Amino acid sequence: MVLQQQLDRVVAEEGVPGIIAEVRTEDGDTWFGAAGVGDIETKKPRRREEHFRIGSATKTFTSTITLQLAAEGRLSLDDSVEKWLPGLVRGHGNDGSAITIRQLLAMTDGLYLYSMEPELVAAETGPAFLEHRYERYRPEDLARVALSHPPACAPGTGWRYNNTGYILAGMIVERVTGHSFADELQQRIAQPLDLKDTYLPGDETTIREPHARNYTTALLTEPGSPVYDATELHPSKAWTAGGMVSSLGDLNRFFGLLFGGRLLPPEQQQELLTTTSTEGAGWLPNTRYGLGIYTETLPSGITVWGNGGAITGTWTLSLGTKDGRHRLTANLNGDWGNLLGAFTQLAETAFGR
Image (cartoon, rainbow, N blue to C red):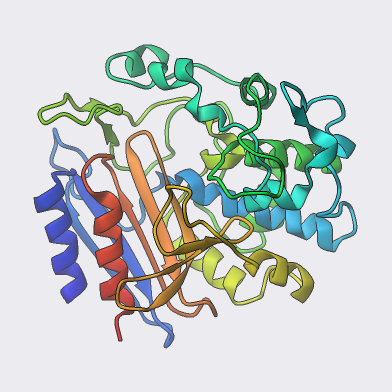
């Protein structure tokens, strides 16, 4: 299959340890492919059933749960952040009463991106990653980092990729329900959909078996930069913006059902799919962002829908047709090279006419 050749090429040309991919077609058929290794020392191959960290694909789950709560009348997307998190979003020109839940999910809230805080970036760079990898952050800590800076723009006046809003959204879910986000994830999505590999780790610094090893250059881009094993880390810095674990099969099933209209009523489904242009924001070209999902027009003109993301040591992509019937999910266990370009080529091959 041509897609297998693409997987082999990613490993050969980008030098990442390994990649796995699963395609589910409109006819219900599935295809799995792998290239490279899951462990650079033992040369163990990558496997279909692996658990892996999914990075910002977590945002789709956070958005879905929030939209379910809106459908139940337990919150409104027009509610202000101040209503649910009183007194938190204040100072340095930030005003939680002027930001809605919808703007958090759409990334039009204007808040500072906490993960760009220089001290946090330094803690992930080079050998410092090994020293700081197990540090635990509370959601309130991450919010306060963002709110120590003035907003990037006024709410609703521009789109900027932003983890901060998804941390606040996770906090709102917990405030509304009285339960942990991890519990809501299990009760609302993982258990009903039989997603046995999908969870928010909490304080677990390992990945549940089976899994590959994850590798990182820790933000260093120079040729010959050292590679570190990043399999173990505390995911709290990403939490409801990027801290979840899942698998190929679980992600294809979740996104398929979501885009197929099986998880949200029509009103909330329309909210999910209402997009904002990302042009000029320095993000992925030819994309528009909805509520925790994005749509991309590939160079061939094909339009795909889904989400993806990275967390130290791993990249994940899950894209497909708008009706959810044709899906591609892929995972890399290294985080260097032209991986966005590699994913684009995979999508072109998987969805090419």
